[in-house]
Image (cartoon, rainbow, N blue to C red):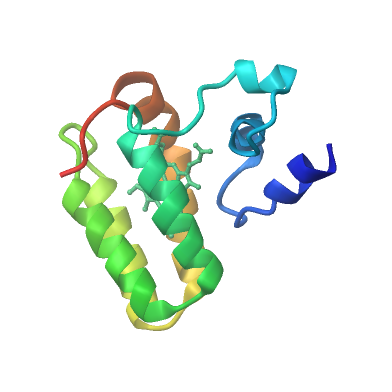
Length: 127
Ligand code: HEC
């Protein structure tokens, strides 16, 4: 199971619940992999978050983080009133080269909206 542990090295704003989805990415059959769906085209935002937002935060490049938060601002799903404001705060932090401030914005949105999005909007196409 060493390979699974290695994959858990996500940025701090990916909380512990994310661990449940990690074994699926390792390509190994494990009992926990059947408990949570794998990432893929069925869950467009999750796929983008993992592939682009998390990687960009890990790289710590402020210019790239500006683009990430601007992209999240454009997603702005109907009914998520604070979504755009949180993304704008992240973009402002990125423009100020404040990577810790970016993390705060990642976490603020996850705390407020991630569970609801998963429960109700996960299959929305990105716009
Ligand atoms: C304004 C809202 C918002 C912001 C800002 C945001 N996210 Fe997300 N993120 C979400 C939502 C909603 C999901 C759930 C998507 C799903 O699971 O279908 C998510 C999911 C994720 C996941 C997937 C976790 C998993 O295992 O499924 C990662 C990783 C992630 N975000 C990283 C980041 C990082 C890094 C940042 C900051 C650079 C960030 N996010 C900023 C809303 C946001």
